[in-house]
Length: 145
Image 1 (cartoon, rainbow, N blue to C red):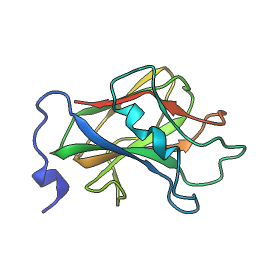
Image 2: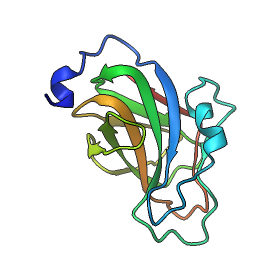
Image 3: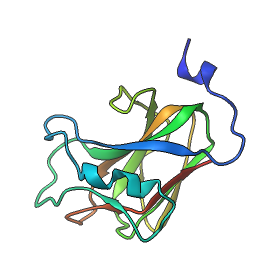
Image 4: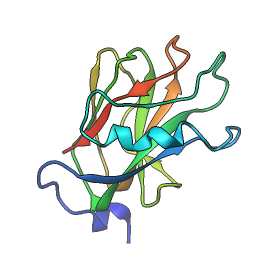
């Protein structure tokens, strides 16, 4: 059975219960792990952030947020104070993947960016593929509905 077949229809805001950094090889597996909960705590004064990069020569890095059960939200919105980066939303059923694309890739041009989702899962990866000239990306909140 596919994730989409099991995913419940949206019934308002999705409550994220867990978060994790995602830094697959060639990364070292860590990306400010101690700050991941800041992206789902509802406090815009806190943030999760990537490591600092002098050059970004890997496929991507990201933040995974996890719902209590499989869901199929229509949108996922992030708030950031470092616009200019490029990201895509991917979904799966584990904090460690595998993940499949559920949104188009887009450059975040403002402090809030909404992604239209086509698919669901329990875990949603904000997959950052270009830092947009920054040495670090910060995400204050991740919300879905």
